[in-house]
Image (cartoon, rainbow, N blue to C red; front, side):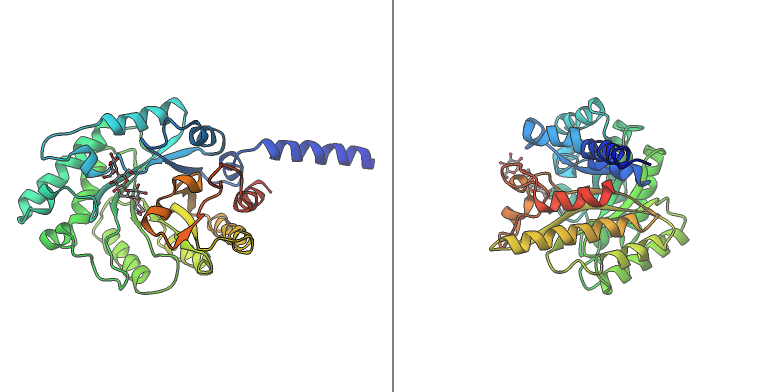
Length: 332
Ligand code: G3I
């Protein structure tokens, strides 16, 4: 074949890949989506929504689908914020990951004050039935239960565990399945990125849930990572996949210890590539969601100020080396 023809084909393919999005590229590798977050603080920011539209195929609400925003007082449901996110996702043809029902953080005081099993059971069932029922058929997956373990593998001392022990998880999943049979039901956790007591406890719990016939479909590994500490990710993704359930990276970011410099940004590129390759190499890893588009909007700088620059676009929405690295992995 003539060199000129080969060069023409290569330039055509590279032009095609240059126009491919992160989402279309990862779909071409058999995954379901490359997602990100949206909410009231970004839904009217075209710098964010343009990238969500052009690069991503799924969205998660960063905070407006959580208990205190939807049912701040018992029996009073406010869906104004959550409907905004849902309508944006539907209008822009994005998959929706619902986040989250039962979580020890962000629980209204009226829930934390409950001390008896029957009341808490009814409150969990009612919340999930009302919320999952409202969005029935429109949500691809729900993070039904979030962050149940301490880092040492013991259960968190939440109102849910104090009053119902482990049964709160069964109650939540069964209510979610009944309310929206089409949605994939996930248990979501952070700190599953390296071998240790937390992932061991998580996998043991998953085994018990399956043995009790709890309707669980997927395992969400949040993947809030620290630069220099991502080596264990691929192996732990495989351990999660060995359960036979779907696995998803649900809240990916790689934070850099300040001061941020070019060497750390170059390392961040390589580490994002190894995490993405980890998901690509595990067939049950169905998709990846980032926890933010631009460094400007990341939760990291306000919540963990010793770190910064965790995402793929910088504060001025310029593509970082991290983006180039991720794009190269999914597009080739
Ligand atoms: O919107 C209100 C604003 O009106 C008010 O003035 C302000 C000060 O009180 O609060 C604003 O709401 C905040 C909201 O983010 C929007 O910025 C809430 O207080 C704040 O708690 C909330 O933080 C979110 C946090 O979860 C708790 O829900 C973060 O954005 C979000 O990134 C973070 O995400 C979590 C995941 O859900 C679970 N995994 C860890 C991850 C990071 O913590």
